[in-house]
Image (cartoon, rainbow over all chains, first blue to last red; front, side):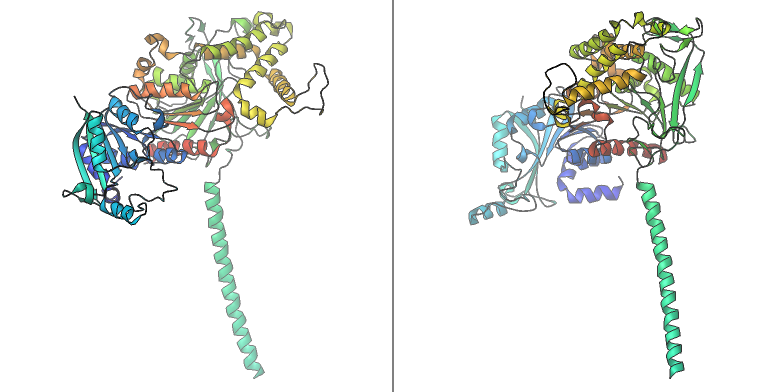
Length: 204
Length: 418
C-alpha cells in the first residue's frame, strides 16, 4: 500500500489513525471482527505490526486474504479459546463492541489474550442521537447507519456508560480520543463527540 | 433528375456500405477482444499430460530403520518452471491418490486428474503462474515403487517385505525429486487429508525449502477413533484368506473381499450423515422390502459399487501402508506431545482450511494446528468452509473454498512476479 492509499484510508476512517498513533512499531495485534482486514493492512503498512484478524463471515475471510492479512475464521461470541494468555501487545475491537452479545466476557477475554485493549464505538450520547430520541425516533446516521429493525447493534452505549463499565470491571483506561468526523473533540465529549476510541488495560 | 437520383442513391449506398464495413470490422475486433478476455479468465484444463519416471539409486533410510536401496517415483508436471525456479508447487496426495492430479491422457481422455477442478489455467492453482508437480508416493500402486513392484534383488514383488513408510519418509523422497528437478525452494506445498500431513511435515523437515504450506482437511495427528477406523479397515484385508500375509501376488489372487470392505468402511467416514441422507435417504432399489440379505437400500448398492470399483485397481498392501502412515503421523510425539514445540522449527506461512461437516478430520483438529502456529508467531490464515460433503469436501468444487484458495495463491504468485 502506498502513501496515498494510507492517507485515503486514514481520511475515510479517522479512528484508524487514532489507533495507529497508540501502537508502537512492530507490535503484535489481534483485531476482533476485523471485517475486510483494512485496519490490519493499515497497521501493517503504517506500523509494521505482526497482526491477525478474527472474522466470522465467509466474504470477509476472502477479503482479508486478498488484502494480504492473516485472518482466523471464528465466532467472537464463543470466546477466544484458541488464543493464549498475553499472546498480543494489543487486542482491538473496532466499531464492533456495540454489536457483541456477550460484551462483558468478551472484554475480559481481550485483556486475557492481550496486554492492552483498544475499543472504538459510536457514542450514543452524541447530541444528534439525543435529539433524535427526544424527537421520538431511533437515530440513523453515518455512525449508526441502521434502522431499529435491521440493526446488528444490541449494546449501544455512551462514553459515560463505557467508562462506568470499565471502572466496575476493573479495567484501567489509559487513553481516550473522541472525534466527530476527523476532528478531535475536547469540550463536552459525551455530548459533542460522535465516535470514541479507548486504550485500556487490566487495573492492577 | 433521374441521373441526379441515381448519383445520390449511389453515394448514399457507398456511405452505408463503408459505415457497415467499419462497424463490422469494429464488431469483429470487439468480439476478438471478448474472446481473448474469456480465454484468459475462463478456467481451463491443462490438457494432455503424461507421466514421467525418476529413478533414485541413493538408499533411503526409512524412519522404521528399514533401508530401501533404490526406488522409482512417477510424477507429472503442469505449467512452466520460471527462470529463477521460484514458482514450483508440490501437490501431495491422500490415501488413494496418485500423480495424475490434473489434465487427461492422449490415449485416455476420460482419465481426468483427481484435482482437475483446482488446477489448470485460470483455476485456483493457476498453471499460467505456477509450475505444479504431482507424484505418486513411495509405497503407492500407480507407478512409484511399492509393495506390488518387482524387487530387483529377488525378481518377485516386494509384498510384505516392502518397508512401512511414514509421512517423514515421503517428504524425504519428495525432497530428492525436488533436487532432481532443480527446485531448491517451493513457492507452496499443499494437500488435503494425508496430503496435508505431508505439507505440514515439509515445514518441519525442510523449513527453508517451502515458503507456503496449504494444509487442507487435515490433522496434527489422528484421534483414537480415527485409528480405530483404520484398524478395522486393515483387519478386513489382513483376515482375507487371499491375503497370504501380504504375498498374495505369488498365489495369483487379490484379497478383494478385504479391500472392498476396507473401502466401504472408509467411504462412509469420508461422507457426512446429511450428505448420505440427501443422496440416498432410505430409498429402496426395487421400491419394496424383500426381507432377505440382497442389496435393498440405495446406499448399500452405492457402497458395494464403490468397494468393487476400488478393489479392482488398488493394491491391498498399499492400502495397509497408507493407513499406517496416517496413524503414525504425530509431529508432537518427539516433543513430549507439545505441538507448539514441534512447530517451532517451521518458517513457512500457512493457510489452514477445514470443512464444517468433516467429522473424520474435524475443524477442531485444524484449529489445533492454527493454535500451534500462532504460538510460534507464524503467518497463518484459517478458513472453516461450510460444506455438506464431509471429508470429501476438499475434492469438491465449492465457490467460497476455491475463492479462498485462489486469493491466497494469487498473493503467492505476486511474490515472484513482482
